[in-house]
Image 1 (tube, rainbow, N blue to C red):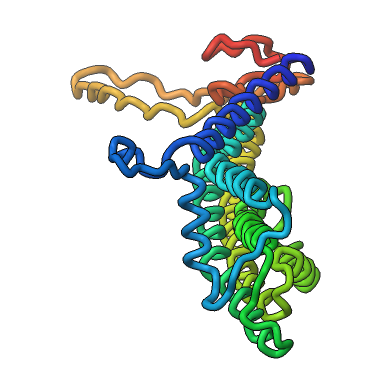
Image 2 (spheres, rainbow, N blue to C red; image 1 turned 180 degrees about the vertical axis):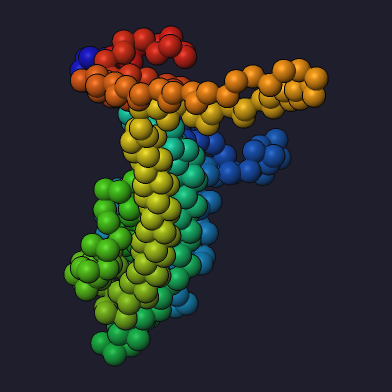
Length: 341
C-alpha cells in the first residue's frame, strides 16, 4: 500500500472509533436512565449520566460534607465532563480494537494471535483500574482529607462541587489508564522489543518513575495514597515482565531449534539424499549338482578403483518450500516445481 492508502485506512479506523464515541456520548447525554418509567404519570427525565453522577455522590461524598456552586455554569460543566469521561471509558475497547486492526497487516501469524487477548486484557484491566480508583483511591483520598477540615476549623466542610467531581473523575480515568501499562509491557517483552533482563537490571529506575507517575495520578492525596496505587501497579508490572520473559524464552527456544534443524539439513553431504531403501532379499542360488563337472577355478582379477575428480561448484541446498535437497544453482525445484531463485 502507498502512503496515501495507509493514511486513508488510518482515517477510516479513527472514523469508526470517533463515531462509536459520539454514539456512546449521546446515549449518556439524552437516553433516560430508566426507559420503563417514561409512561408513568409522575415521570421525571433523568439521563444515564445523571444516574452515574448521583451514584458517585452517594458512594464517595463523606458525611457532613456539603456542596456549593461558585459559578452558574458549573452544573453544566459537570454534566458534560462526566458524559465525556464515561463515554471515553466505554469506548476504549473499540478504540483499542481499531488501532490493533490497523497495524495487524504488518504482523506475522504468531503476532496476530495476540490481537484479541490484547484488546481483552486492555478492557479488563482498564475496567478494574477504574473501579479501583472509584471505590479505593477516591474514597481513601476524601476520607484522608476530612480530619484537616476539623483541624482548621472549617467544619462542616463546604466544598466546590466542580472541584470535587473533577478530582474524582481524574483519579478514576488516570487509575484506569495506569492499570493498562502492564499489558503494553508484556506485549513488548513477548515481541522482543524489550528484554526482560534489561527491565530487571534497571528495576530501581523503573520503580522510581512509576512512583512519580502514581504521585501525578493521585492529586492532593499525600504519599500514603501514592503508595496505595503504587503497590498494585508494580505487582502487575512485575507479573507482566515475568510472564512476557517466559513466553519470549519459549519462542526463542523454538526458533533456535528450527534454525538448527535447517542448518543440519543444509550441511548434509552431497550423497545424503535421504535414507536408502532397504535391500530386497536375493533369490538363493541353486546348489551345483554333484554330477556336473567342476569348473576350472581361476582367480578373478579385482577391478581397479577409479577415483572420480570432484565436480567444482556441486553443492547441496534445500528448497525453501518443500525442504527437498537440490543442487546449488538450480532454478526450479524438481520435487515441487517452484522457483527457488
